Image (cartoon, rainbow, N blue to C red):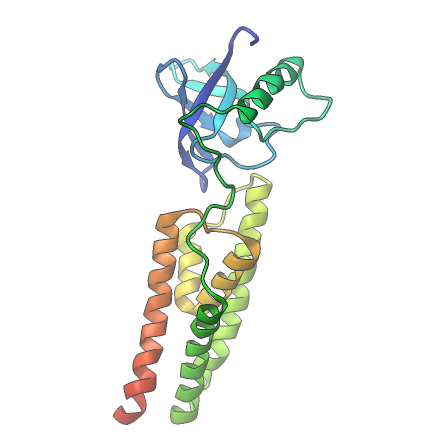
Length: 230
């Protein structure tokens, strides 16, 4: 390994803001990593990734990584620096014979997939509820609002994924949840299934499914008792 070249494991990562921290293999202090330091990465970082990097220190003593790449996810073009081509051989051996306590991570590890019947039920209940509401009260706004917000939310998911792939500033999770709460959760659900986006973060999935349950529960209550209360 070229002198000065370091290796560590990504132990903290904020994908929305594009930074995290590396724990060096020698157990020394954590090293700050910004997304811009990953010049030749073929994907965004994930917790547990092995990162190769050079150390850089600022005038105030802060240590950060520079010229970094993710083991197994770097650009293998011929233009890569010699030291990266050399460490690529080491990386290939490590991928073929990983340490006993490490397991490959799936890029799209996610919450358990729902069945097609459950998918159909989730998307049908609000449509039936909104249609019944429109027929009973003469107010067609919910029936029109759901498709509109779903299309907008799907487009927002697609834009956020596009920004993530280009390492640009992301759409905030609060904005995505706000659109879901406003009736676009159906579009968000379809975007997660088709675009494979926002499926790995458990805290995000928890908030998303709370919104789904809130909407489904509200329409079930309306279908059972709503018309009788009018």
